[in-house]
Structure formats: structure tokens, C-alpha cells
Amino acid sequence: MIWLWRALASLCVALGAIGVVVPGLPTTPFLLVAAWAGARGWPALEARLLAHPKYGPLIHDWRSRRAVPRRAKWAASLVMTSSVLALWLVPTPGWLRIGLPLFLLCVACWLWTRPEPTP
Image 1: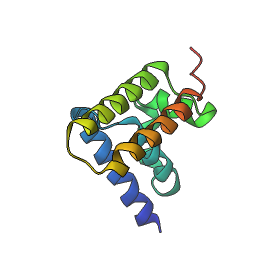
Image 2 (image 1 turned 60 degrees about the vertical axis):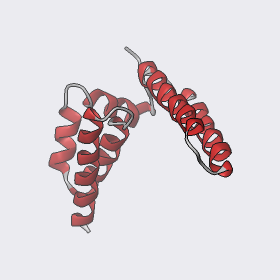
Image 3 (image 1 turned 60 degrees about the horizontal axis):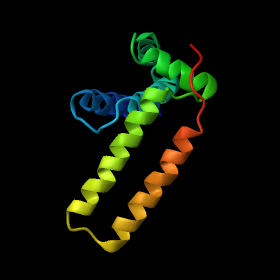
């Protein structure tokens, strides 16, 4: 079972690393999952993620208060909005043109109800 946790953590770290260079692909959610999986099967990786100068505090804030920084909320909202706009510029099925914006609106509402980290 430990190898499954390590495989999930490794996959999420890889996707997070790709997200650093690919616009629109989020990094932090993948690192949150990597830290979660690492806590179950790879404590050294979890410790390394928690000690990271940029992403460590975000992971701590999420774990302690489920807090999301305002800047991340704005960035996610802008990416979701641009995704919906791009969806309307290409030929797509009607169910997708309606369903995806509704889903992303629910995600945005949920995201904006998360507390913000204390300074």
C-alpha cells in the first residue's frame, strides 16, 4: 500500500511541477494532494513539501484552517472565466457549454467561501 501512496504523491508532484511552467494548470492543488499522500506513505516528501519556502505556507494554511489566499482565489477565478470564454469560441456540445460554466461557478463560490490566511 505504501507504494500506491508514493506513486500518487510522485504523480502529483510531477503535475505540480508541470503547472509551474504551463499557464492555467494549477500547482498548489497538486502539491496539497502530494503532501496528503506523502503523509500516508512518504513522510520525507511531506516534510520537504512543508519546508518549501513558497508552497509550504500554503499547505500549512490549508491544513490548519482550509485557508486560501485572496491572490489564489483571484487567479483561479480568472482562469475559470477564461476557460469558459474559450469554451464558447470553439465548437463544443451544448451540454458542455452549459454544464461546465455551472460547475465552475459552483467551484468559484466554494473557493470564495474559504477563509483567508492570517498574516
